[in-house]
Length: 346
Image (tube, rainbow, N blue to C red; front, side, top):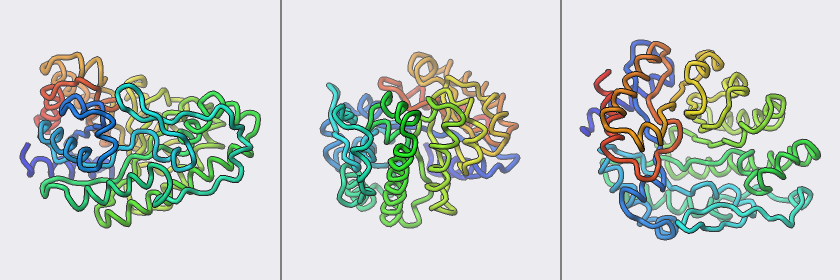
């Protein structure tokens, strides 16, 4: 894809986030290891264990797609929890996750310190990789900061989802302390990324699917303050959130936490989410990564994407994307059909 076209799409994306009227609908791709692996053949352990291997695989994948990235250190879901003492394990495909320590109680985390992103866990690995990416990237590609797990998702990884939810009910004050430690660790993590990226540090992307498991009162007490604190620490930076769970019940409060863009999931209705967020937030997603992009034909993807644009372009806040990260095995031609639909409709 021509660089001029990619630059126009980037400008349209920023304009949509700002809610400018009369701007064409941009596309946004959410790409991580599963798609990169299926396009390039790189294996998990090699990908996650070496900065050059990771960057080269991303470069190759984005070249196939015809985009300029962004390249970004991909630490899966483990950087934040590992920096707070979580144990990283790998599955049969070499994908890392955190193994919750069944022997630990919530009280065992009471004395835990705010993570040092330069020395602790996979946060330190991310910063090393980010520095490598900035130094070695191709001239025609961009580098962005790493996606980060939000405090609730980080704590759920440390404690196990079930135990974390019980913590909120039975030991709320201790849970709040752990969430605060996670939030302060994330602020330090993003500050370290900003130091490396400089002016290229343009957005923060947090993932927090676990927030959808909570009731509205729980979200307001345990999660929303963390969003406000983390996003508020970086004025002037775009604030992105990924939560592709069933988050309709918390949508109105999420919209008041200061986020600019929300990557929602196929499980929720885009129209309902626009109503719930009252035009405060740019929304992207709602094409299914599996039903549409993975299993559909190029023609079907193109038609489905055009239908989405026609339905929501008038909101001034719609961005064309998939409701979740692109799946392993998704064909390049289908992803290109999504992008082409946005360009043709502009």
